[in-house]
Length: 145
Image (cartoon, rainbow, N blue to C red; front, top):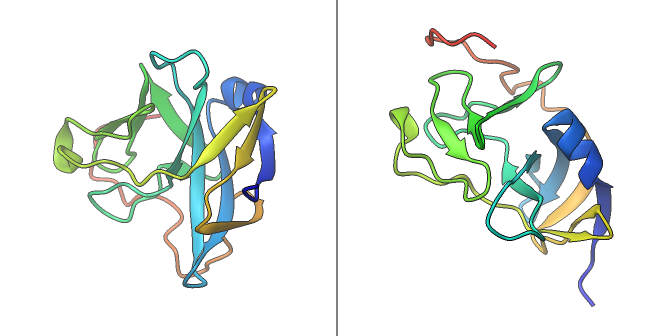
């Protein structure tokens, strides 16, 4: 049986519109992962998990105190406005066009969300403790959230 770790409930992600946790990868590096609602074609997929970084620049998509900006089924990069489809992770606009967010494997069972990615080990809810990491965008965007 695969190892899994209960993260949160589907209802929490749907209510809050995003939910963040930190995991450790096989190289010993901390990785932030954002859970977002997904209104895809499959009824059983209500939440998807993506690494918390824009593919254009190492910009956090989910920021402490703000969350991830999710609009019309897309996750908005707060720096340049690129929008990633919350179900596929693919971006078709802005500087990140043509790229896809790295996914993280999760499983939903009885409306509970479990981390089932063999390459990650759950550490804690919320952002990483990496002090060298930029906390928010030095935005050149006209977008306001």
